[in-house]
Amino acid sequence: MSEGHSKKRWTVLAGALIVQVILGTVYAFSVFVKPLELEFGWGRTTTQWAFSFALMSFAMAMIPAGRLQDRIGPRKVASIGGLLLGLSFLLGSVLVAESRPWALYLTYGVLGGAGIGFAYVCPIASCMKWFPDKKGLVTGLSVAGFGAGALFFAGPASILILPQGTGAEAMGLSNVLLVALGITKGGGFGLGWKMFFVLHGVTSAAMVIFGASLLSNPPKGWKPDGWQANAPQSVNTVDTGWKDMLNTPLCCMLWITFIFGATSGLMAIGQWKPLMGSILNGKTFAPEWMGTFGRFVEPVGILAIFNALGRIFWGKVSDLIDRPRAMMIMFLAQGMAFMMLVTVESHFTIFLASAWVGLNFGGNFALFPSATADYFGTKNIGMNYGWIFTAYGVAGILGPVVGGVLFDATQSYVMAFVFAGILCFIAAGCSVVVWGLARARANARPLKAAIADINALKDLERLPEREAVQAPSLNREYAAEGS
Image (cartoon, rainbow, N blue to C red; front, side, top):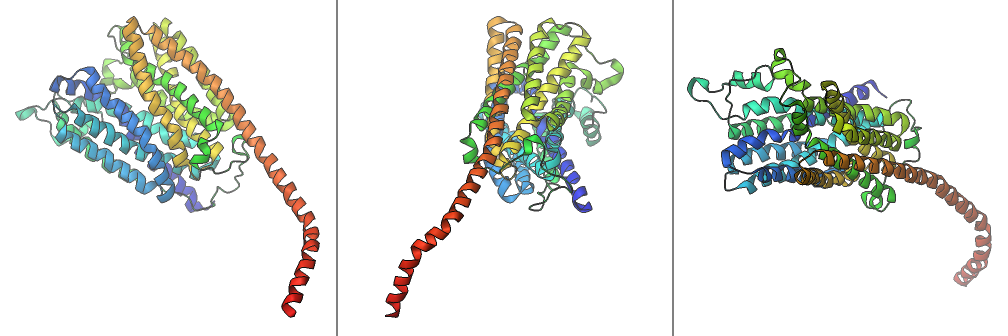
């Protein structure tokens, strides 16, 4: 590996992190809920549909985005995603009104979700191609920013989106910058939701396009010096097109496993804040001296931090023990954590539960793209993982809805978390099936190759016989021509 390429792949990773941090702000949708409800008198169901549309559009857009990324490269496609995301907020600032909640669904939901989907797949695909020797780890690193984006965004955004002040209270540029960096808490007033949408739209587009400018694919046939694809999950990998991939039992089982794992996580995370609020009775983890940075040590902040770390941790673990085994251990650990949540009471156990759940949920987004690359190759990883990721779109609907129904029916969080734990145990069982199918697929390839070689040898052995049979007829043809 040349020195230039060695530096280049780390630049690509830096660009991936920049893009993903901006995209990850989608998980901070809750900061928009109260201001919009107060402004327009909307109910919670009305606002939550915008988030559901965003998750659905996010997942569905990854399919065409992945195909386009495989054809024209990550830089252009990620830039398209940044433009769509920025445009969604700019249009929302103009179109959203009390009588037009559908405008929020179309702008933030459909258009913004599509922008995230277009940009999200590019850093993953690009980093996998640059780091074939560390697929799990680098995938975890490239999506860690997505898990952390909401953590850095939610605090400043919740202040900046407050209604505007008047006269001397109006927020100036220096105030905006200080609040955006998390240095000050502001003065009880902000920019208003319209100006905030404009600010966030411009910033999102600019930062995603900048990060995209650092993305690229390696030269054809390139690989790190001295690296051999000798890890168990990398043996006999053949680049597979999306149609052939969808026809395999292995793909179907990966998709089903992702649904169970992501549904359980989203069901729990969607209710994490009210659950922990009921346990703490309005108390806070953060000491007063931490100021605005106190959000990092609250239960939701802890969960977000470990959500990001979990993507790196489980990605590295899967490089060492292979993807299905890592999935099985992760889902079993998560299932047990959900089952024990009903007994959480002390601050220490709340901290531990928040960290544990975040760590394991984040692992989904490192293991499934890495597994897709292992089993179906990196050539078409953008398109292939786009199809696998539709499982997250299904989970994005099932998780919050089922969790909400169970809470409404019981007025308790116990059933929701017990059900989430059961789904995790099912996902762990599915991981065992994935492991078996992957081994069968790997063992079948050498057998098919050996059969093909034997048939080729038999053809060579029959060649003299064929020539002997064909010789008399050829002689007759030559004789006829001579006459």
